[in-house]
Amino acid sequence: MTPGASTRSAYETFLNASCDRLGYGPSIISLLSLAAMEIKVEIPIVRDNGELAIFSGYRVQHQNVRGPCKGGLRYHPEVDLEEVRGLASLMTMKTALVDIPLGGGKGGINCDPRKLSVRELETLTRKFVKRIHREIGPNSDIMAPDVGTDARVMGWIHSEYSAIYGHSPAAVTGKPLALGGSAGRDKATGYGIGIVVKEYAERRGIELKNATAAIQGFGNVGVHAARAFTELGMKVIAISDSRSAVFRKGGVDIDALIRHKQERGLLSDTEDHEAMDPARLLETECDFLVPAALGDAITVENAARIAARTIVEGANGPVTSEADRLLRERGVPILPDILANAGGVIVSYFEWAQNLQREIWPLERVDRELERILGKAARDVLDRAAAEKLDMRSAAFDIAASRVKEALDATGF
Ligand code: NAD
Image (cartoon, rainbow, N blue to C red; front, side, top):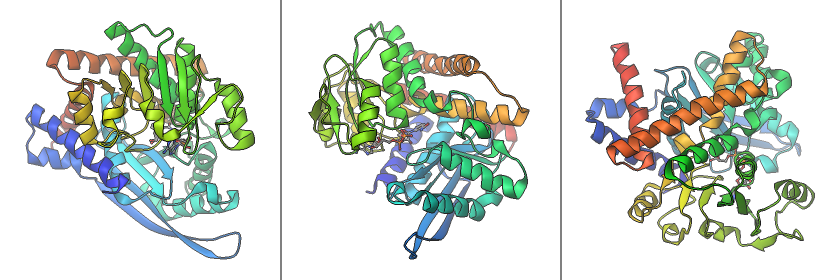
C-alpha cells in the first residue's frame, strides 16, 4: 500500500467505526467519506537548465457544508491523489472537531522542493494557481502551508490569485505578515500541541515539569512543539529530521540546533548533543512521543517497540490504523492528529477572518483565542472519552462526525 493509500484507509477505518457507534446509515457514511470535488492538473515548467519538466498538481475538496474547504498544500515527491484525498477528509474532521466555520480540503504537487531553484518553485506555484483559480478562493477553498511549502509559497499564491480577482488576501492563509498574514500563524501548530498536552496532563494528573519528550521532525511543527514544551518546563530529550537525530538527557537546545542545521545541513555532530540513529527516535523512552514529520511513521513494524507513555500526533496520519489498534491494546494513549495539530488551522481561520474584515489582530489576541478554542476542543474530547469509555481518537471522530452530520441534516439535502 502506498503511504497515501494508507492515510486514506486509516481515515475510512476510524470513520466507519465512528458511524457505527453513532448509528449512521450507508448514505451518510458515503457523504462523510467521498470527496465533493477532485482536481488533477499537469504543470509543465522549463527548468533552469532549459529542459521541460512536468509535475502533477492535486486539490481535493472534501466537504464544505460547515464552511469553505480549508487545508494545506504539500510539495513532496510522493504526493498522489490517494494521499491528498485522505488528508482532505481529515481536515473536514479537524475543522468540525474544533468547531470553526470551515470545511476540509488538501492539495499537493509531486515535486521535491529541495531540488528546485526559487525561480522554478515560483513558476510551478503560479502555474498551479493559473490552472485551478476558478475552483479556489475566500468563499470556496483556502490553501495554507504544509510539508515542503511555507509563507513565501503562500505569498506567490496570493499574488497570482489577486492578479486575476483583485486584492484577495483571504484566498490563502499562512502568508507573510507583509501580505496580510496573521501574527502567530507560524508557531500555531506547534504551540497548539503544547495547549493540548497541557489540558491532557491536567486531566490525567501528569506533572509536566521535567516530563520528557521525543519529537520526530525538525520542520515547522517539530521546532515549535519543542519550543512550546520547553516553555511548559518539559525536556525535549531527542529530536530528528529526515537524515539525522540527536539526544540530550537534560533537554536539547533548539536555537543551537537550528543554527547548526543552517550551517551544516544536519542536526548531528554538535559538540554537546549526542548523535542517534533517526530510525530509532520513535523508540525513545519518554513521557510524550510526537511524530511530527510525515504519515505512517508508526506501523505494525515498529508499534511494539514504542516505549513512550503517550503519543501526540503532530503530523497528519502518523499512526496507521493497524498500529493504532496494537497501541490501544497495549494501553498507550494517543492524542489524535485532528485535535493535537489543529492549532494551525485555527490560526489560519483567524487570518482568513482578519483579511475578510480588514483587521489586524495583535499576537496576544491570537494566542488567547487559540488557547480558548483549542483548549475547549481538548476538554470536549477528554470529557467524551471519559463519558463513553472511548479512546481519544474515537471520541474526537464521534464529535466531529456528528457535527458534520448535523450540518448536512440542516441543509435538508
Ligand atoms: P516541514 O516541511 O516544515 O517539516 C517536515 C520535517 O520532517 C522536516 O524536518 C523533515 O526533515 C522531517 N522528516 C521528513 N521525513 C522524515 C523522517 N522519515 N524522519 C524524521 N524526520 C523526517 O513540515 P511541517 O509543516 O512541519 O509538517 C509536518 C507534519 O505536520 C505533516 O504531516 C503536516 O501535514 C502536519 N501539519 C502541519 C501543519 C502546519 O501548520 N505546518 C498543520 C497541521 C499538520
